[in-house]
Image (cartoon, rainbow, N blue to C red; front, side, top):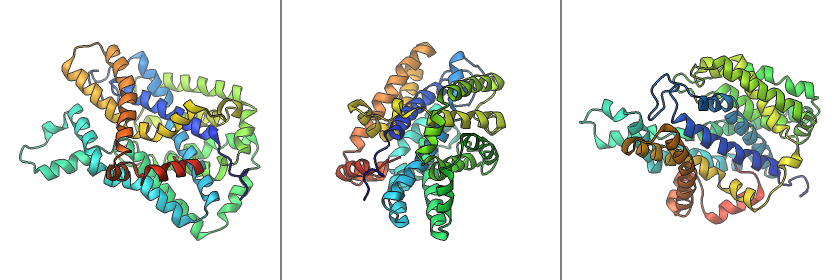
Length: 377
């Protein structure tokens, strides 16, 4: 085996944990907004300057995670081409926590979410406890939608690889794409954003996220592609930031998370451009590791899984039992999201049965072994 070929790409780890941190900040501010209907103390329809962060990051931060996941899938399958083993690992890692984990642990999150939204008021007192538990479990899906969709894309990828070998020719050709052609991927991104959107549940944007995942697998997994983008990293980042500001101004006052806004060509084009800008950040700024980045990378999955629990618990208690100003509540909720998220992860990851059902980790030893071999997303 050529160890050089399979060197660890630390820039992917760093982009991932930084993006997860952005997700935590986003969810905390989202809890205190009056636009999306998910709020604790903010009257519906009100808007604050802090909400500009929500407008700025929402069009792209999950897309970049799906791109990184697609790249990680390529790395994993290059190491071990067995589609069966690949899907087995992804089933344990993604599907079990996002299905079985709902009923074992995430019903707690569901209970909190229902209390915040006052959903219990709509449920009759005669509802059987088992049915109530089922409702709370399904309501606890929260951030797990990402794992569910990743498993679906992993399954589709295995099927594609099984049906035809010609798909690898596509990958071989994309490594030679010029910068202008890479930039033109904005066009299919806009088109895919218009399809496969699940009604009502607006996080399941299967079209654009599928395009992101498979672009990661077939295009951005080439190290040459980010290197080409890096030659124009500064102007690309400046244009992306300006586009983000323009997009924020254009949609200001509207629910940025609704399909009519987030799938608008302007929003999608900005989001994809920002993804390209992030991928094009020169390696000298991202392709490094130390004890801090290693720790953040190792814990990023756990933070993603449990930050929402810490955030919603803190926000609910502050809203119910204090009269603190919104800004003070946010300043308390944000660090609590990190602290409780990391703490719950450390506890769950050490309990064998819960570790498997909730995190898809068979053992601490196998988890460390897997992380040492490849990128786990």
